[in-house]
Length: 249
Image 1 (cartoon, one colour):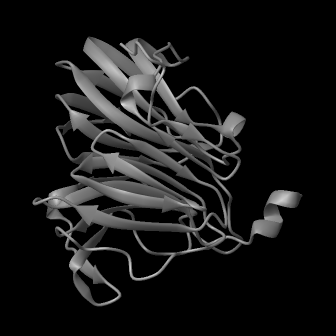
Image 2: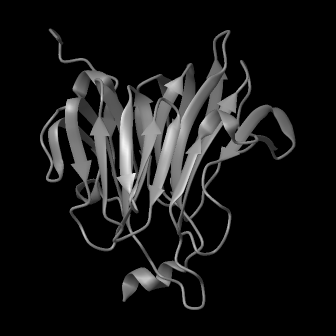
Image 3: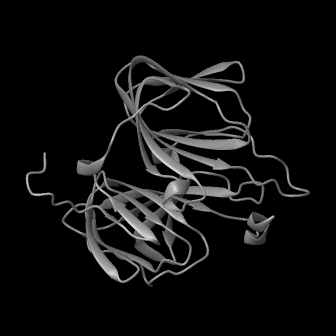
């Protein structure tokens, strides 16, 4: 409870830092016995939706919107994903990519939390439509970013043109940092999983820690440096593999 009105949360036209003390829970269609926290949405200026679901035992979540692809990453608990006639058990660090218009259902066996990225799918002429992807983040091989062994990246989705979104984890050794201030056409949604440090967004510097959410609009200057004695890690979304001119049609 805030007695002074202070918070680290900041919202600007090209970025937002959203901290757990300001999260508001509400229901969303398709989710039963579930509290949903919408972090990033078109109302903020984004071209995707990012939210956390907090599911009670017996809670369910299913597809309700057409032409929307979904990426779900388990943070806590035990769930089952029913899709394409098969039941898949999911536990922390398991994830699922569900192509647009794929009927599916999440069922919680225990109190569970997931972070969800929903995005309209942009088809690409001549490319196959993506299929279902299931994975376990610790099992994905990591690679150094730009040759820096202190900064490891795991690509959670296949790196091919059929996908118009990418979701990765980035792990920073204590003291590691991005090698440049990035400024690019892609936008980001980011959830800190562990550790913390300092994030530059546009012309502001913010202290960040596990549980924080960040939105970065296209062309928002961005940089991160890890602080502390343990590794820092975040889950990050971006749009990829499409001409932005398609958004004008």
